[in-house]
Length: 300
Ligand code: PAF
Image (cartoon, rainbow, N blue to C red; front, side, top):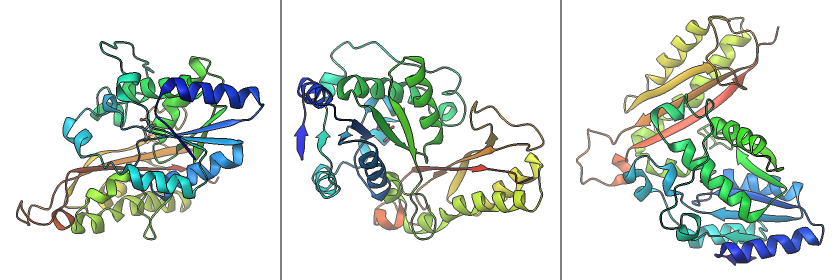
């Protein structure tokens, strides 16, 4: 496995692979790799001859500097996981190459970037699309794989890729879950013991909505009410959003669910106030925002 830092070196490698007729897949990540990322690598492997994983904690997509500072950075463990997964190249871009001094150019996808995570995290998607465009330009992949847990991110990147004519196939990889259903996320390590137990209400609320739909409920309001009640069981969290939207346009659905509908949820957990500030962070936890989603499909 090659470890490349320089953008020029990656471009030369990529040009060589393309000239030899080999297909390249890119899996962009911010590191702290878990089985969810490795399932994207496995998908990339199936779709291409060469797999590149980029590891870069992208400062421009964090609207909270504390969140950027706290983001887990475990490069040695990540490299070991990539080696074991048969990755061909790990690209660890230098921040100063991706964002040279005075950089002031941005890629912004209007509309799709605005609701859901775009509402509570201003500038987040502009940071994501800008860095992903830079990653695409350097790695020049034929295909790129992103997790479906970040449903909106996937939609925004698909739109950007089409709008800018990158000619890259964008694939979504299914969300990988813990045995109790919690979606894997690099942020889960920041949940304290009690919050970790409560976080299960997210996937339970998705399943509740799905079963209400299966039993014939079509009212958006009734479904959202039940979802919010279930999410309310997480006393250490507040609901950032719980919304029903069209999976293609991300527009809010009307009163009656008529076709496939995205249920998107974001919960913001806080440290356990019952525990002193100097207690073990594994018990007390940190601030952590978790998202999850499911596309609900009415059967009749
Ligand atoms: O999903 C992520 O980990 C990041 O948003 C991405 C796509 C690697 C861009 O920094």
